[in-house]
Every structure is written in structure tokens, then in C-alpha cells.
Amino acid sequence: MKSILTTLLLFFFLFVSNSAFAQQYRVVGYLPYYQFGRADNIEFDKLTHLCLAFANPIDNTGTLSIGGRDIDPIVQKAHEANVEVLLSLAGGALDSEWWAAWKHLTLSENRSGFIHTIIDYLYEHDLQGIDMDLEWQYVKDWYSPFSIELKDSLAAHDMLYTVALPGTYRYPEISEEALDGFDFVNMMVYDLTGPWNPDNAGPHSPYSFAENAIKYWRDRQGVPPHRLTLGVPFYGWNFDDPDNVYSFTYRSMVNKNPVYALQDKVGEAYYNGMRTVREKTELAMAELSGVMIWELGQDSFDEFSLLNVIDETINRSVSSSEEIVTSNNYRIYPNPFSEFFYFENQEEESVRILLTDASGKVILEEAVPSFSVREIKNQQIRNGFYFLRIISEQQVVTSKVVVKQ
Image (tube, rainbow, N blue to C red; front, side, top):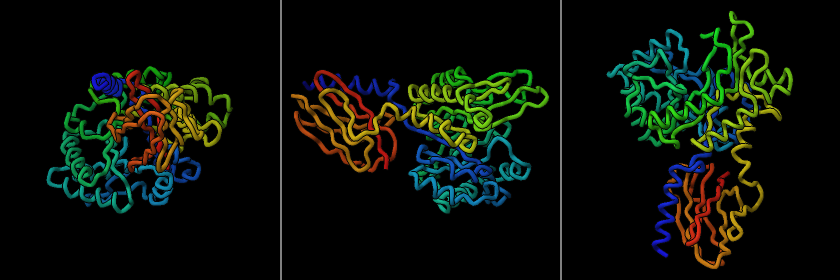
């Protein structure tokens, strides 16, 4: 029996590293300061992470501001929904004063002081980490040294460090050490075309772009799936007039006609509707560790909500009832659970159960005798999806379980 279990365990770990079920729970939403007024419409409990965008140093002292807004009410709302909140730095468009401050503060002699200011800001506002969003022309040779030093400080305070990067492009200034330092990478899989290329009218975020982004970051750049999050847009680009290509929100399309919620194109206006967002979410569940949204304030806050589509797609294979039948002879209840769940073994032989997170890390391992029930207590793990492997001499059964406080 021992040799059979060893073989099954080996199969299990190979399965975890390659299986679609190994990555399925992260939902990251960006909320820019100019959308804070829509916070009451957003169902934060359908997120795992919220990125507040964008904070910049307003002068050479390193004082941070996010559009001059008070972020604390938003942070409180997110925390009440058990969501981790990150501060997104920089953004894709910096004014001259911000950019001058960035260049000064990232000089080798100024980095430590600036990073200290960043850490103080996180503690002051009860934030859980940093999302780095310096983009394109703002990514310079100092990016990697600064990022590595920032990562070290965040790690010392047990805080997250994430990044937003283009869908199929790696800035050459990002070293391997810097790339490895990010807890996860939010792939910006949109803006394949736009007003910068008005003669190239078409979808700016097609499904094929998502597939190519996965191949690029996972297969070519070697970032493991559990550290990759697929970006989806809640906006589109209108090419009706090549001399005036402009952006629009998904919500505006639904307001024009609810039927548009199921489409990706109206005239020369291109966006992602409900079907495509569902398909992309399924792709992310199969290949990566979740989805990222730019941005939450552009959603339709009704039955056509794209955030609802993402949430329902992720949760539809997990029953909201009090019991899940994983096979004819095993039961897990309740699921989702908060403080504990019960595992019932109705087999004539004992089994070994392993609870793992999305990366395959074993959280607990227990033997359950035949015809018995075992109470499995919450090991202070965070909200999200986890996987219970049930190993017997004959088979390995996998079931998803959900922690939801």
C-alpha cells in the first residue's frame, strides 16, 4: 500500500504543477481615484485584491498623493469585504512634476528614504502592499535596482509586491531578479490597438491576445502560472471616426441597448462583452491564477455586470449548498466554509486527504479511517479557492473547497 500511495502522491504533485485546477481564485480589480464615487456600486466581496490607482510623489520629499483623494473610506469598504488593498504606483501617464520627482527619488542615494516613505504610507492607511505600474517611457535603468530594494523592504514587513506589465512585452530594463521579486504579475492584455494606431480599427483585447500573452509570459519568460493574472478590460475603443478614436465604458454600451452586453462589437466600437469575459475567465482558471480588471468603475452595476460574470464563472463549479458530493463515497460539508468543514469517508478503506492552495503548497495532511467523519479546522488561511485531494489505493479524487469569511 505504501508504494501505491507514493506513486499516487507523485502523480498528485505532477498534476498540481500542470493541471488547470492548480490556479483558479485571484480576482484583482483596479479602481482609479476618479472612480471613487462609484464605490457604493461595487461588490468588493467578489474581489480578492483591490488596487487603488495611481499614487505618485508630488515633490522631491517623496510625499505620496492619489489624485488628492482620501483613500481611507475605500480601504475600509474593501476590508469589510475581506479584500486585500494595494497601492498602485505611477501609472501610464505622469505629469512633469511627478516624473521629475520619480527621477530624483530613485537615484541610488535617495532610494532608501523614498522606500521608507512608501512603507510609512502603507501603514498609515492600513494597506497590504504595492502594485508597481511604471510603464513604457518611464521604465528606465534604475527600475530594477529600485524595485529589488522596494521588494526587500516590503517582504520584511510581510507585504505584497505586484506589477502590471504589457500583454506580450517585457521591458528590457527589468532584470530576472526584479521580475522574480513580484508576488504576481498582472498582464495588461488590452490596448492591442487604439487612437495611437487609428488606421488599425479592430478589437483591442481579443481572446487570441489573451492566449498569446499566456504563451509569452509563462512559456517564453518563464513566469510560473501561479504568479500570472490575466487582465480583462471593462472598456473599449471606438473607431467610427479615424480622426477621433475615443474610449468608452462597457456600461455605456449596456445603457444604449442591453443586447450589446452579449456582443464585442457595435459598428466600429470594440470591447469585451459578457461572453468573451466569461471565456477569458475560464481560460485564466485553466491556465493561470485568476483575472485582473481595468477598471471597476466602468462596469454595468446591474444584471449585466462583468464582475458578476467573472464571479459566477469562478464559482459555478462550487455549490453554494450545504454539501458537495465529490464521489459516491466522500462528502464535504459545508462548502463554502468559514471556521471548519467536515470530511466524511464512506469507503471501506482509509484515505489520506491533502488540502493545498493554488500553488500546490500543502496546508494540511491527514489520514481518515474508513466509515468515519473528520472535522477539518480553518488553519488561518485566507479567503479563496483551495483543493482537497483524496488519496486511496484505487484513485485520487480532487474537490474544490472555498474559504469565505
